[in-house]
Length: 333
Image (cartoon, rainbow, N blue to C red; front, top):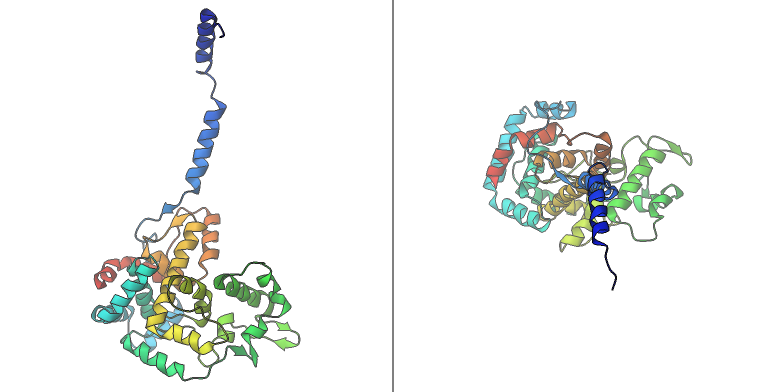
């Protein structure tokens, strides 16, 4: 065994103890920095309510539609709320679907009310959408432009970057990439002696018979449905959709039994985007999920928010209404 010089041991201990009063241990600095970095990386929950004191400006197109119907925003809001309150079958479906996608059903209520207050004529009844879905089912539809099907169109070399990954791309990643390439390489441009319209990807290829931008109870577009099909198929018993079967895609936008799943998927996707990229949890703020439901492209918007350095994301005019009238929406459930 080793023998310890007791006096020398205690002298050394005293010197070290005094020295530590003036020297910050390297390990402490490292721990503090690490803790700060970890804290910055954690997800913060966005406070309830609106960040804007007053409602942001409502787009002219929405005002024009409301004026044309000889109505007001308040009247349309009250009407859709009344319709939802008396349609117990629809409310039951909303709650059931929301549970599948692990979101609060008030997010879905907010999206429906927002769409029918600002972007569509007021909702008369959910039953009307079942009828419309049946009528659409009898129409022969193809997703094409100038005789070229969209699935053939995206085989062009400009879209190769969208398929460069060796692993299977999700439907959202793939169709979002196709959309970006359309905007940067084809929209309003002349390519291979063909002049392409200035319209967006969805309007050019996915609405050959209809002038509207979106359809159904949730006012979804066919392109949005195609983006979300993998997410829906993964969490429900609904089969994944394919652009080669336009009739099924339109049915998914029109039939409430199916479209509710796609609405929930859009909202869930927005929450995931802001949690993953923006490092904030928006699941307790229906006005923000409604804003993103209205605007789309949540992953890019989450990245932009993170770069902005702002404390919290902010609602638009559509989401502002949802937060402002949240008690009315919660009373529906």
